[in-house]
Amino acid sequence: MIIGSFIALLFLGLPIALVLAMTALLYIYFSGNTVLYLSFPQQFFGGLENYGLLAIPLFMVVGELMNEGGITRRLVAFASVFVGHVRGGLAYINILANMFLASIVGSANAQVAVMSQVMVPTMEKQGYSRGFATATTCAGALLAPIIPPSMMFVIFGVLAQLSIGDLFIAGILPGILLTVAFICTIALLGWKYNYPPGQRLDRRQKLVNIMAAIPSLLVPAVMIGGILGGITTATEAAALGSLTAILVGSFAHHEIHLHRLGGMMMRVALNSGVVLILVAAANVFGWVIVFEKIPQQLAVALQQMTSDPFVFMLLVNLLLLLLGMVIDGIAALILLVPILLPVATQIYGINPYHFGVVMCINLTLGLLTPPVGAALYVASRVTGCKPAQIIPPLMPFLVVVAAILVLLSWQPLLVTALLQ
Image (tube, one colour):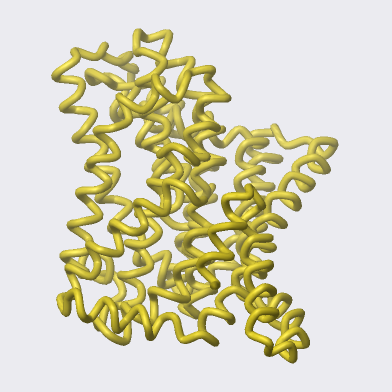
């Protein structure tokens, strides 16, 4: 009944938050246990009573301030110092700049929107096709939900009641691994398709780019340094990052203007409101799932299929890949964590941080795969490039992410090494 109600409401095109809340209400009605109606508001608003959720609007503020303060442009120039002169240099710059920005923005959709405006026109002028330029930007943006800080990690940490700071630390090695894999992919593609060489900078221009980027690099340094050093929680790091971004944008770059802050804060309020309503509705849905003992039933079914943790992880990856194609990544995370996490940790003995990182990486693929593919359509709208032109050059990067997922599922130490 729960599954049927959920699928029916989903296919009616209702927002996922409304689908989750209405499914819970329908369950109470059909079960006849109407006393649960009294607990519904408490469960709904109780899902928001978590200090870690404050990190979501704060990270959004950091991303908005970064755009307003000219940090994006300076980080792109900083990346050009290292790889700008090699064949396919702009593609490398795209990936490295995305890596730097991933430690600030934390949202793939936001990063795609920003980087598409900056990198795609520049790459087109240098002779790259618009489809490849957009695909490279989309691939680089996959790093945003993985390299800390990450809103998906925040939500997983809240749902799983895990340390968000430790989740951020667990995402560092997989993020670096993905960056290196993307760079190797570009190198192979550049050798095959003979991409144009980048512009060689003289020593003076390199020094200018480095000096201009130093204030911008303070933002991720303060945030990640505070978490790794055990000085701040993830939420406190986001608040310090916001303050640093204001100071850098106002006094170092002189590009933040007070009259534009009102519109910026309104965007943050609307976007964070959408996410927080999802979290609240998911808490009610998770309450119903636990009440019906669905995780225990799923555990019995999976144990009959396999007792191997690696095979279980492969099955989960396949499920997430299929679900991520039709449901937004955050919604899928909210829906599945209460069901899958108890099975993974209690039945198969999988480290919850390992499971969380793999789950979040997998669901980022859904941002770039039709029919939902939110980040894909954001890039298409910004650049004017049709999704059909983006997907073919994007495929090598998606295959690389899938291969990394299998590797991480097989070797948990690649995720948990920094937590030891």
